[in-house]
Image 1: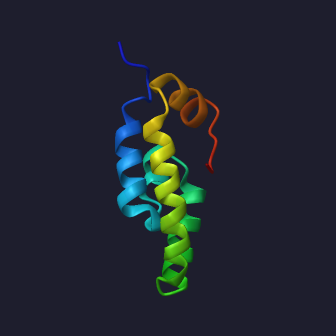
Image 2: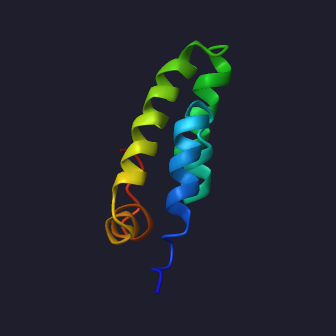
Length: 84
């Protein structure tokens, strides 16, 4: 039996690692404000800020994938922790 919200863990983790600078992983989790911030920083700085956003996405993707399903759901689905 899977926890509701746990199905987002792999998608958010992989997108965080591969597309972190665009904030796609934040959109997957429903964090629209945080996702738009990451996307705007990347676009407005012509990609230079994307390096920083990409590192943030990489770190968050790894964190998502290393948590258990229960920890992931409690932290990111139930308690809505937007950053790290």
